[in-house]
Length: 150
Image (cartoon, rainbow, N blue to C red; front, side, top):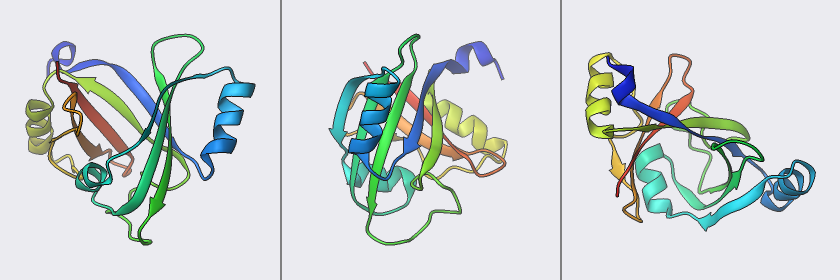
């Protein structure tokens, strides 16, 4: 696999929080992060890529004080206690990391041939700016693969 053409950059780290207000006070006021984007996510899209149902999902993307990466805080309100395939993408703590890729469909197909487990096939985001798929590493940790669409 030609790594130079598959991975573009490290994208973000996602942390599931119990209380967004308290978390923002900590990350903004104590650590100096700044809000880049604050969104109530489309739960239909989230259900498709994670295989789990939610009443709502509030995400806040924060800029690191130095560098290009982002910190994403996620506050999930589940419909039930269902879990998807043993993963922890919606429980408190660091939930996943994301990589920007050139062609998510091609990368998805390549990883499938290597027996990598995916939660879903690639899906286009509601805003049409990205195509996303989640796979699991050998320990069941979720990795988000994102293709930016111009």
